[in-house]
Image (cartoon, rainbow, N blue to C red; front, side):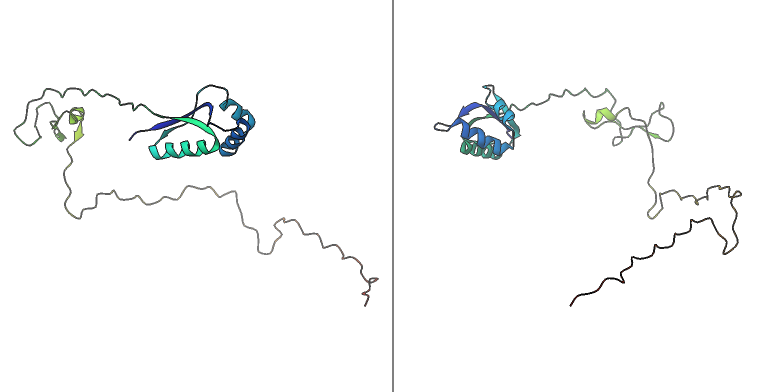
Amino acid sequence: MDLYEIAFAGQLVPGAQLDQVKANLAKLFQADAQRIAMLFSGRRIVIKNNLDAAGAEKYRVTLARAGALIEVLAMPVVVEEVELAPPPAMPVPAQAGVQPSESVPAGRLTVVPRDEYMAAFAEVDAPDFGIAPLGDDLQDDKPEPQAPPLDLSQFSLAPAGSDMGQARAEPDAPGPDISHLKLQE
């Protein structure tokens, strides 16, 4: 997929007024006057990059309506070259990919790589796990939870109904005297 970048160098669409274009761009980009002045400094400024063709065209049309003449340039595609390591020189076994060897301890598996991509895994030491019968539970049993050791010897219970030292609530203040107030009809 081709990617594009949008750049602006302060050029205006023919017939556009500079003050009007600055006001339009300030409104479009929601920018202050200082940032808009940077756009019109004469330098080429990349506004947006990594756009697809439809997005780049949308920017071009919108900014042209605002009065700004922009450049839409294709971005170079960087392809990283990867050189593969040659596969190790190993004899081809008689069986399908599995080779017993005297240097491999019992219970270990040796696999010959099938191609140069799998050659990276030729030196991996992996246990030779068997296959469990159908229906076997492969998960270890969970240990019973142990209660944490707590020392509660410093605590005691107070007799029922005893004062536990709570702060007593202050009695409510008396309400205001409104006996002298009358309703007028």
